[in-house]
Image (cartoon, rainbow, N blue to C red; front, side, top):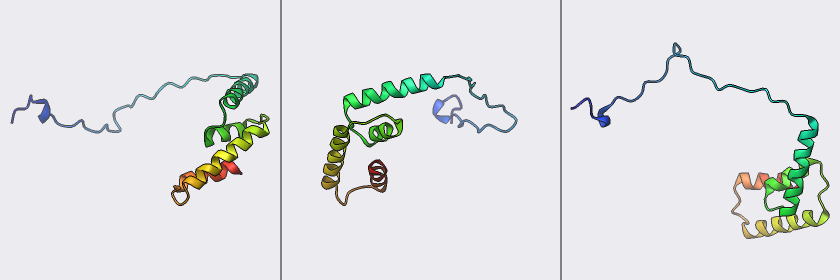
Amino acid sequence: PKTDDPKQEKPEQPKTNDEKVEQPKQENIQISAAQVNDAISKTSEKMLQDGIESDWVALGLSRSGKNVPIEAKLNYVKSVTEKVEKRINRFSATDLARTIIMMN
């Protein structure tokens, strides 16, 4: 067989300990608590404007420390109830665990 044929090339050999693997550079970025709180506040407001459409949004809002209006909470509970009724006996363990965490 021809050795210049790209189909016949040998696969790349794994790197040995003698070869140095370049590590990505890490930057030390300083962010103040005020900046973090401002970002959480703005993100929470956006989530509330858009509505609680997923378990992850519900988790983010509940952990943000921000006041979530009762209407938003009730709408979320209603949507979870509908989802459970539709998918009864068809929840994956992950879906079930995530839903339980959100309702806690």
